[in-house]
Length: 598
Image (cartoon, rainbow, N blue to C red):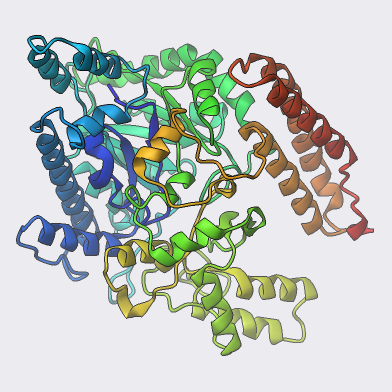
């Protein structure tokens, strides 16, 4: 059971690192990244001291330090949430108490909110009973965690010997969660990692008890139905049940963006809606073979479908819930403007408040080589330029989470690192180096950000903690939807906006989220075509045609879907259809033989 129809997804390494401690006692679920154990250890120290608990540092010299740091931090966050929740429940239903706020924040149509209204209107003699009933039905938000499955590099001992697989980054993080006291879910994002998925079988909490309860749930963040089925079946063969498929827009989201070949969110959601029962039946049948061998019978697990990426109005929120019958809708980037909910430093917050629509862009900043949603003029971007001006490109690589490149070295290094960029400069200066390699190298020097430091620094500075080595440059990963929000908001106001009690949008005309996603895909396709060379045109032609056909199918789907949007005004629907028609015309004119290539 959940109190709210929205959740706060993971944002960066640090923006939601303590979000559950801020909001879970109000019944709101959120997600912590457990990639950056250095950040986690600093936050653990802060919480231990604030809770007056004896703190002992878990150092890099301690065996299995990464997993131990994560386990200990998650346990202390759970203690904080539990204490906050019990404190809240002990209060009286009076003005300005957190108990009253718990119920005031709920959506007006929720059963618990309706019962709350009944209590307010009840006679004095009836109120105590209703108050007790309300408190008994209160629930906490889930303290979920996230692992980007690809961040699973091997680690080495002081002699340069490769450590066993269980000490790889993602494996150790998974162990840290699995051994914690949490009763919650782990979100696996960025695709399948067979070794990591299989490792879940090492921990009993991932298997059901006799009441079909899973102490640790598996949540898969996916971009389409096919990937959900493939990953779900892989896990099911091992007796691992997927409790939730979390569908995210490929481009209309924050952080790393994984383009879905032109397949749009609406058609993807429609397929999940149509095939949900089929999906449950198939995965359950596969799981039951293993469960029977384990002596587990009559297990009836539940499966949730949730969605996130680009939602910005109460009408869109409700449409996703009602038309696609999803269980929850993720609201991410808008909460970057809510310091009550996220951990963000004042300078970064001010940058977002004053950012223009054109300041949000899809960048090549990530060392992973995956497009990364960004905003202009961050302190991290300015630091890159400062280092280049001093003829010292690249970042000192202390944390090493994104070391995957072996272009110049046997042991992988990070493309944002000083080591890599110095080697790239040497390569560019060689007379035999092709012009295309030089051009690509110049771009690498200009844009690659140290995300290990940049996506963690803001959380530390927001809490008055000095980052190590004074590396205070901040990377921000907002989705393009944030262009329609300007201001610093309270949690109450943002939740009021989600549920239609307030309107926090700025004065910019905002198309429907589906139209925004469509425009982002068209822009992405055009940019991809510009990167083609004359030698690769024929090879890329099939890609472009498939991309375009998927977009055309999406446009036709949205034209019909518009009539189902009963809460939108007639003028809004007319504008949406006109936008779709204009984008369709633009798409017809896109050809792989762009003028730049002739």
